[in-house]
Length: 90
Image 1 (cartoon, rainbow, N blue to C red):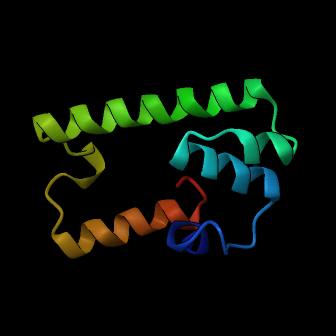
Image 2 (image 1 turned 30 degrees about the horizontal axis):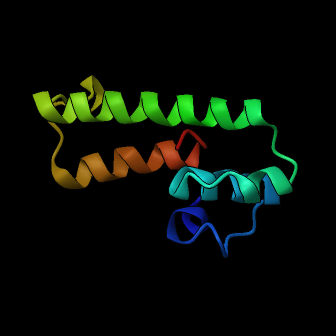
Image 3 (image 1 turned 90 degrees about the vertical axis):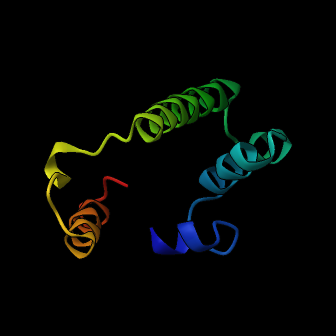
């Protein structure tokens, strides 16, 4: 996960995933399609990204914090979020 977040182009991931991430970053589908990603999979990726962006922006706008992070110090919140990465949720 860290490698993908740092640089998906160099990360050790499947070419279909790399092509999909490139599409989401550039909106150019040619690389993803050439790697075998279907048009429906690209639509699905856009739907997921759009939903995530909408929810994240709304939560940021109203200052929402997850119930699980309420009352945590900054360091505790970072450690808490790290567990999501370890479990593969992010």
